[in-house]
Length: 440
Image (cartoon, rainbow, N blue to C red):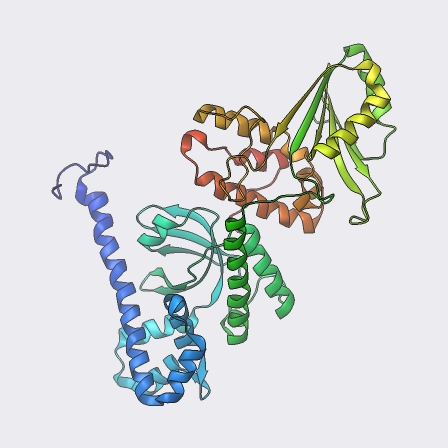
């Protein structure tokens, strides 16, 4: 057993009492806060049964379920009214001056709290998490050991948080976290139904109707998440094709580069760009009735002596290849095709796990290299979730930029779960788009 004055076994070089020993003492103090809050809830419940009898039991049966008591009870005690006031308000009023000051402080802290959607921005193992409210933009550093062991960055949770005695603790967390896109769907629907614009005042989130709606939307999204995981992923583009990122590569004589550039420029395109020394074309087809703005079928990258075509399905790749070869096929040679499967190795989860078809990576270094290859042109690849726009194009639209930021947070979450040796540095995607890495 490590003594208080021994060197900490973590290797920090500090004495145990100044390192992990201090954390243990701090953890005990935080746990006492949680225990006090839980005991107060039980006291309010016992008092309310005596005060309101069968009416309170019937109300509790309407709002509380056995599976979600830990989440539902704080919300029920502090938000749901009986005879015009919540159980906690009745308890505080009728206790009056004889109410213990610390209990009153916890009651007031819970009354000030609100239910909201919180993005986990940082995890401190063994200590707690930092979270950002996606509706109010408030941030908190919440002390909770269990949460720091189960949550990962970019998890999104539905929770109440109380500020008490110089720190913040959870006072009810829904059992099912969501992925960033699911959480954004909750936020978008809540805003639409309740007509919430901009940073939402906390008073609106304390309202019973708002809280109940938020819970209902969240539970629907949580059920969908579980069902999708059970079925496994079936991603498609807007043509209904299975998603399979397909690249066709050719060689050409450098002297023919301008002729290829001129010929491809005759096609209907979204835009022609020159990122560095390369020339990039984005090709659009305007005959898809599902997309009035036209459907992006792929991109072409013209290098010094290489042409690379990229699409997100085999059918679109064949369509683009046929067009290009009809226009400049006489100038091209050495055709090669490869596939980048965005779902490879996902294990039933909606995680990108890029791999060249038929060449499954076997080492952490190979896995990381495949990811780097997959994401090397990601900023310029059409993505169905962005309306077949590329991330770079999505940056120009307020609507699609928001979707893009959610997508990036989801990639962050996925990579945070990977071993460090396999992890892709998501900051490179932010840098490629000139996008600031935000916490909320």
